[in-house]
Length: 70
Image 1: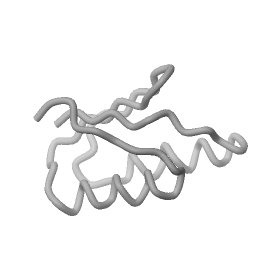
Image 2 (image 1 turned 90 degrees about the vertical axis):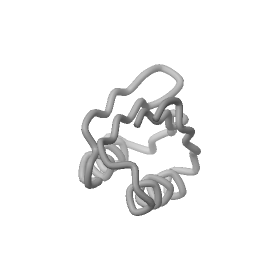
Image 3 (image 1 turned 60 degrees about the vertical axis):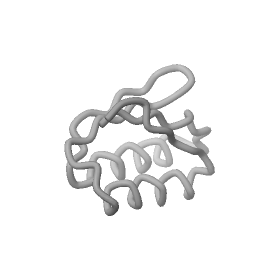
């Protein structure tokens, strides 16, 4: 499944590192790529737990995500 997360605004380098570290720690997360306007995330297992984890991360950084392909 391919997701796009609105690009967050980071307070500092440590904040940015924490964001990407949290994404990479999600079970089933295969690839994370930063783009100009969004962060592309590819997940292998897109179950409820995975989507809840992504939503929790988005909530911390006040951004949203959308599913672009299954």
